[in-house]
Length: 593
Image 1 (cartoon, rainbow, N blue to C red):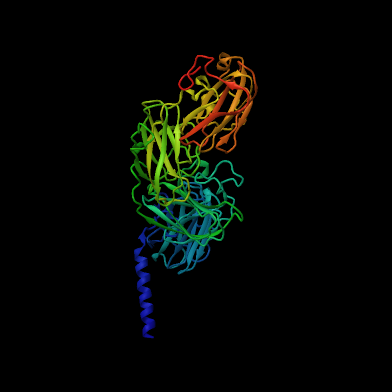
Image 2 (image 1 turned 90 degrees about the vertical axis):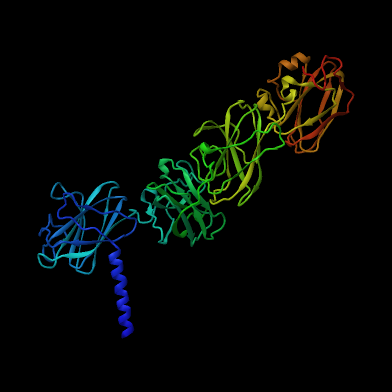
């Protein structure tokens, strides 16, 4: 018996301490300007005292206030934060609880809900509300004498009208410290078949959504997901509902695993509402889950987290990368620049800048280490933060070449990990190089003469021929990187069979015949279908000009498809025909037309 008494006493102490820990917010005597109560994501109790000196009979009697005696009443007001609002009230006297659209004593008021309970029990009302609208709560004592005082607790809290976070408008309030479980079986806001509005973190995850809302406190959130029953589940943090064109703040995708995972957000702005959605990609398009949220103080992002803090990179005068600039994506956050123009997920992008010293530069992301080595980069121009993508600069490869830059202008390099999984720690070096001047025969307008034998010191990083000379028909050559143009003038009739060799993949095309050099030159940028062409993945080719006539001129394009520095050799391997550069005034090694 002694132990039982001790337990009862301890329980009372705990209960009393908890009661005293609640805030004290008393009701008002009348509803003209009642005290306001906060609306919380969950039931957070406030203590109250309904004084016996309040007016007996109340402002109005709610529909359920029929039992007991008509005693004093007290009033609160609240402003709705969701489409469904709940009110729970306890008390040491019997009481009626009602919610109205207005104060009945000063306007036309509609009763939205009413409940009456005996002393020691909880009165509860759940009513449909409009976000941002003010409502009035009446607590009407129904027992005790005229001057009795009633004490108890009251809480007002929101829930989604659907009850299960079915879409962003009905997001379930996230409650840190409380595990929240559910099943994302609703179609939600993202169209299952794709299209707008798409998931800004990963457009593939658009099935079976479950939405939470959270008001930022300035701290980050550690979000722990457990109990998944399906693979290809993702957790995504947005700064607005899909209809409001949100930014991706943080994301994690589980891929083919259903294991527990953790997503940590950057610092979430105080007072800003964020939306957290758990969505799936593939069948069965839904999963059970549990979500635990824990606030934490995140480390600061890197200084070059946005383009305004871009780290300056020294431009190398060559391709040797003697000067590099180090960087990391750790703790970085998404930027405001368009995240849909390139591939990958720009949720951890960092920025670098360089001043162009010539029209062409190379970008190399080197020495990658850390949580992932799959990097992506793009180049932007303009005045930060209003930037435009440099056409053709999106690069999944770690090396890219830019053409047509304006010397003296500042350009911005955006570097990020390809994955949508948050918390990456990758480090890397950035090199901006300067390629050598293009060969004079990079265009068909600068074609060099050859007699069927030439050695080319081919380099990488050059443009495609259809960029330099877009008007030609390149036949089988779907791409023509690093072009070298030549022409041959036939001095002996017959077939001219040639051998074209290199260390790695090369391609070629031949056009003709033309009546003379002038005709071949005039047709540059409008060549028709080639007479011979090969786009095979090989380092050995066999170009051929059949039944060539003396005096005819042919144009030949050789491309360094492998895009590496290598030696390419052309020689005549057979046939009775031949070409010569001695019958026209040109230099086969350095001259042009």
